[in-house]
View 1: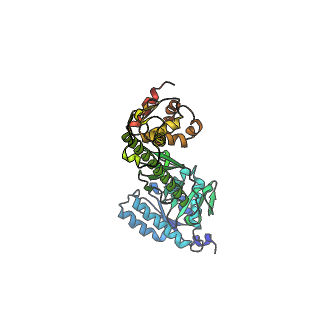
View 2 (view 1 turned 45 degrees about the vertical axis):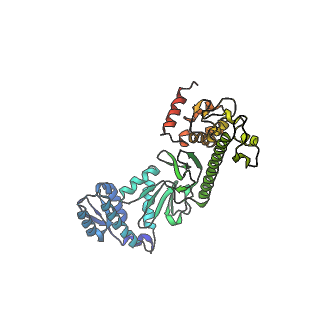
View 3 (view 1 turned 90 degrees about the horizontal axis):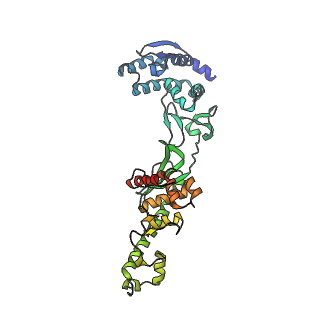
Length: 378
């Protein structure tokens, strides 16, 4: 027996906004009439004729408030209850065909949702991995761009329709990292969320990782874990250098002998001094300024991160902000291309070319530096 023959044995009715049954006929005819009347938005629902009384009771229960989500769900359940019974031999062909018609009538991918609502089909729209419509009943069905689908049951133009279990959507990842004071934020540049790249994980200053996306592939998780390890190693190295510098300042004075702490070390004082700063320790100060022309922008910023200075070309900044500039210089398209420019040129450009992706733009320091960049002469 053909699927169309099976479906013809089942009759459907339209339930109007007052709960009345309007006519009995084939499912396709009922769907067309419902669409003509305005769909579920106007209070017209298609249900199996034998379920008309159930539909009436549901309308009464919710006081004929056809916009009530719970009532919409109940009417949708009744509709698919009939579809499930009528397509035992054809599995899910009926609903797939109906969805294909809706996709065909849609003006764009984003317009598909309107068609689903008019047909009384409940769905969710997700962008967690890739944009797709998900229908839960009578079985889980996805509607998405065909380039992300594998083994779709229906293809309409560039849109694929199929059972979730039969379609594999491959998500691409292009990781980016931003240091925002309280650790490292990892985001996927291949996905957008609320007008910005989608955050997928966070590494705090102790190296603890919090994954926002629970469905990340193992290789991506490994990549994030490696970055967390690098961050901790970098922070530990910086801490060691600061401690060493403090020890040298405590142990040496002009014309003084090494303290007992240094005498226990198996390295010369000169080597230790050179490893921290090429200048004599007693000549350094907290507000030490690294002047323009002495080193590249990268080295100037690294000096701040290591605690050797708190200024770059006269501009005071925290270690966290200096690291954010380094991340921007290393990861952003502008930073990669023009990273060899003098710091003052990069400083002015950074606020227009994506520094906010690597620093906390709501922080007081960020706002002060941004204001300073605007006042600098071009």
